Amino acid sequence: MTTKLAHLVRRTSVVLVALGLVAMAGPAGADTPENWTGEPPTVVDGVEAALIFVGIPVLLFAVITLLVLLPSLIRGERFTVGGQATADQWFGGPVKGTAELPAPDDQDSKAGGASARW
Image (spheres, rainbow, N blue to C red):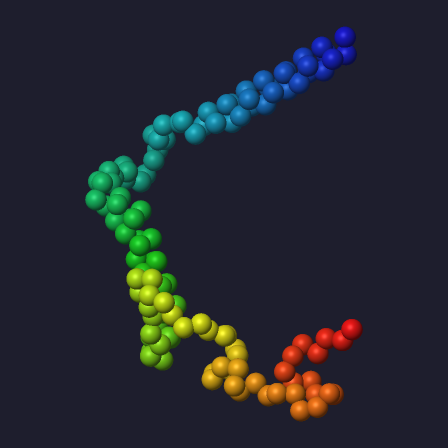
């Protein structure tokens, strides 16, 4: 008996919430007030809508891309296009490869490795 009552309460609450949402959405479908002092809305054609919804985001994308790439282009760095192979890079590492890394001098030297101990 209690499960039937709980089921009825659950259904009733769902229906009441749905009716409340529909009642709150009623004013959204209202017409323009008669004492409206503004001009009637203008119709936007397809070209203008495309310029607004497509042109502006594409323009922003191009400007942001240019602002990101501009410093490296000014420094003269080259970019590969079309999937061409590039040399391996070690960011923040030695410029001339591992030849610049110092070799350990003796047993207590910290150079040349992670200095792990057993």
